[in-house]
Length: 457
Image (cartoon, rainbow, N blue to C red; front, side, top):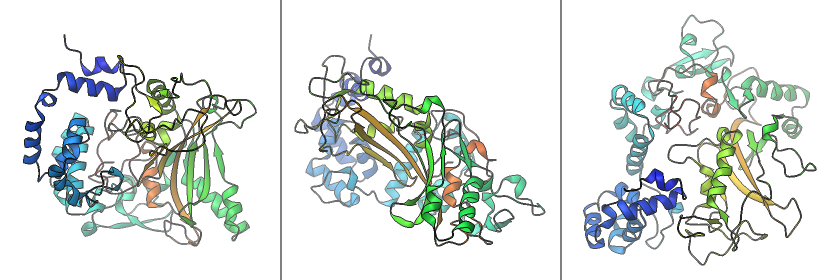
């Protein structure tokens, strides 16, 4: 009886399970490479398919890197012919749109697929022409944009930034969604816009020029015992925190920084003799983090259920041991990479730099380490989950969201960062019904990208 992929995944790492399953059971992988090359030549004008194929099979990756195939890829990707680093790739706009459509099709549940097939006729054609603003659930298309006055902000917003009950033209004391929703720090704490506005307004009246004091004075923590993972009692608790800070790339911009830094403890991993950590133990640790603030600050997606593992990408890092169920200690990287993160080494050599940035969302993960028992003793893995949400500019009297009367109004970024369960659903046709399937990209409690290029909400 043939083993299924699920059976293999129960005894080995998912990456290795997929490799073994393909080698044993995939008829495509059993074809002669000469025939595979002929197939790839027939796809020469389909850059997106070549782009996808080289990511699902080592054989395809090697064959597509051959000069007679790679020549079809190098020019569209806008890289030097000798450069195979995905970090420098830039797919052209139309190819990127096709790739996004394929990913959306794979990541949606059947219910959402049916909804979009019925209710978004022509939407794909519209967005592929570059009308990226049409994808935002809080904004209308430029050609049909209309606004309503928000009494709470003392300014106009797009009509999509209001709930249905607030869109009535005779509505009194109209409030936008940004003032109704809140962002989540953890499963216990929500932060509404009113909390931030009240703090900044207080300091603007008390000491208008002292922005640093204003930022330093803002801190919100959750002291639930489940969040405290410090290694020793002498260390500071690892509470999730919300702070106001100056943006790293623009000191005049103020951001709300949400962060949690759990500790693994010095005995979390059973290291191999050469200093690698078993990937099964590392994955189990990150799954526990995802049950708390980690899964809130940097949400997972169907295509990337453990974004923490990107920090140890097997093509750039040799710090993990991949158990195959047959040969223990398998390394998925080039043998010349000798750095071991989990050893007592302070010099960094891995190409992955053990960090992950989700561009357009302000979400990031960083891996660092410390020695709770002193040097030359087992290390503790510190995982930093962070999300930054632009709030306002120091030079804006009325706040980053515009307005009057010295008010600090919600920014457009804030709208996308809010917990969808804390505000009424917008009426945009790009706002799908509430989906409670956690495996779907439209799962209602999963905040979406701040980048308004997203078609779903």
